Image (tube, rainbow, N blue to C red; front, side, top):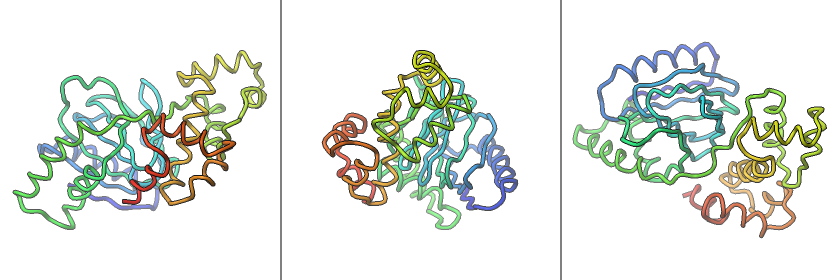
Length: 270
């Protein structure tokens, strides 16, 4: 296992990334674990692995792009990337990443966003820290076996926020995530891009695969997660996101994550 911690130059990050690719593809262990700290703005060009990767954003926000789409992964969640699938990444903020690499199971054909449970987080951390805190061979095998069982039971979440390829539209989307507004209108965004309402609606769906309204709802919840995980009051988060009342925010949050925002925040602090 390898724990690479850096927040310095992009060139160093790139060299260590290339070294890691060689290590991942050349090691026979049933579970590989890798820890990294990436600086904001760091980009990894399209590449693939000969194993399934669980890209776990322990802290920070990352944009992962494949031929099937683009996902922004919030803290506490991960993207399961099938073996052989080409993907690129971009760090939207400083990111602490823990990834594991395992053999491809039958039936995994597409990326999926999952919530990384407390048990999975703890097991991954045990493996990432092996260079610092070695385990006995027996304990290491037990940790790997339990993690292999747990990773395929991680709950799938609709949090892989679709992201456009168009740079102009991507800028608007990123600004929205910094300053979410539940009541943001189509006409405002269309005007920013110099488009008619009808043209913008078609363009947005073509770029993201969803309607503007659906994306806006998802993005508001997405943007709330880092603040909730820091312990900010639910009411303040909801009002700052443009919701008129806490009930509307809670309803949308529960629809997407299956739990109330207050309960979700407690689980992140556990």
